[in-house]
Length: 457
Ligand code: GDP
Image (cartoon, rainbow, N blue to C red; front, side, top):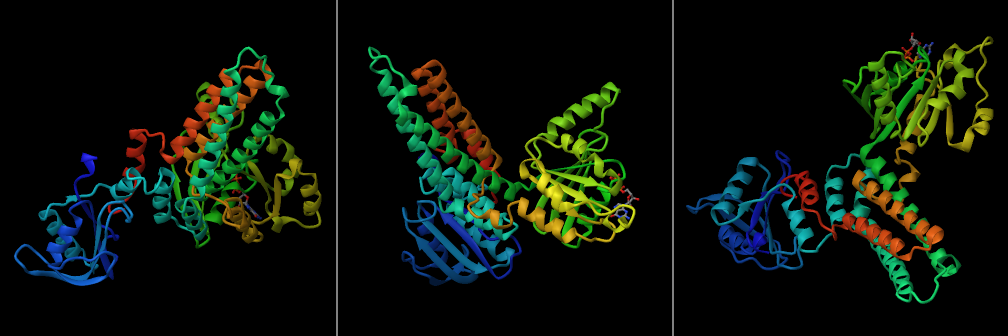
């Protein structure tokens, strides 16, 4: 608590925003500093017109002061917000004066950190604030707001409670060792575990959608040489709403591009060169590249008309987990001699219906609008974004671990009738869940999360 007995101050609006600028104070001395600065006693939750003055009584600016007393404020502490004209010169003078009067410059994310430490928001909500601020599409912003308002945290807590009940039930059973326990025969227990598994899978799906919204789609480009992979990439990138940044690959074979198509972030990896090779150094590169590819969400398979019979071979190159989008390219070249592929039939034949087929021409641009539309849908920007949380990779990884512990718990019960081991797995699952909300705290993690915020938030 002593750490938080000081009062922090920061400019809470982006530099050069123009219009209104806000200087925010939080801590026990906030009200007094605001009062000295504006020479007026601040009333709770009332917008008061004040003249801000420096140490010599010279006016810095005039504006509005707002006072939110603890504990009903964002940080849970006394907060004073000073609204002045947005010029950085003015805001910096206000900031300096607050520091002269006893406040300390806030670190990045320190207001949100205090809100977290004072129990006003949990960790997932704090992260949602940062995500909301940095969101670049309406879908991202909606998902961040859902998380900020606690939708994700509530689900996590509900799951937490169910795990706790299950663990207590099992522990109670093992406390009576004189009775032979047959967990398998306990239908209530088994159906509880099954429904917990479904609940967890739903939460994980929502988190994955949110992660894609936030981080974009990790996409691999697959196709025979000359199928038109680079052309498709360029056509997507050249659209006036796309931004391309080329990065040198991690191996000489792995070409990466980051593209933003209509607000959908795509990281594209070209698998050209990932064919079998005799060169041992190259093999190592290929191995690493392949490992990386396994993380992909989407495989873009590009087919030229003469490659139509290669589809099965190319499918085999796609990462197992990835959705597939098959692009029948060079539609402009198709005529009498190479008729269009029967997309209806291909769609119907597609294994596990996880495949989408599109007829396009990178050269003429035909079909590219549908391609962009599909990419937006797959990235969670379409109807699929309903129910998404602004989840981060760490959330998805933690939920995956929870799922693994739950699965192990079930195996211990079913295969070995080992109640103690199952209870231990459930305890570990609970602990993982608690890292999401920050109930189970790790200072390094907190530091990493809050330092990525901007100052004043
Ligand atoms: P990659 O090897 O798969 O990257 O293929 P490229 O993008 O380099 O394209 C190979 C050749 O096909 C180039 O000469 C392109 O101009 C041509 N090409 C690519 N897309 C189309 C298309 O839609 N129509 C036509 N007619 N030619 C295309």
